[in-house]
Length: 206
Image (cartoon, rainbow, N blue to C red):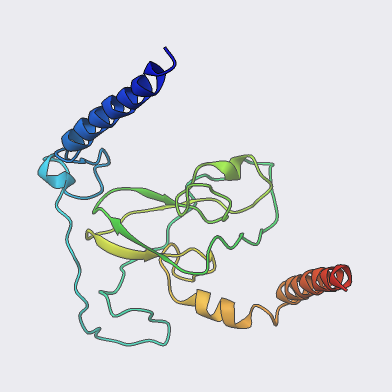
């Protein structure tokens, strides 16, 4: 019996490897089809999804120092907040949370309504997930759509004057952040933190 145990073990390993090899051979022939209609070749499977239109850079008629790209100029109009405040629940203006220092380059569909997060707290960036309803913030989402399907740069720093589209403000924000009171304290705190750890580790080592 003791001599047959190693043989049974090797037989089990051999059988298991054969089954795994069979599964991998079958999986190699599978095709991965996305269930999200806004990605890949969804327009080939769904007649209601328009095909993606790749916008090629073209020279702009007018150039501005705020331009961060030579893509076709965005056509925007002033839009109200998607979730207005109830009467009697006034809150002062809030500084939005910086969700990122680089814009999202997203494909937007013509005519589809999007809700852009302006508070920076959403976990579904850059779109709103209604967390602003439960937190103390004055910022509310902005709803918009585009008149042409294509790729657009969506603001993530929440300070764009052309929100929800990027206008290059994140570059100035990164450049001048340390000179602001908040940036000075944060940068000083980071320096004190790492210098303190270096001092502790140096003492432990010595």
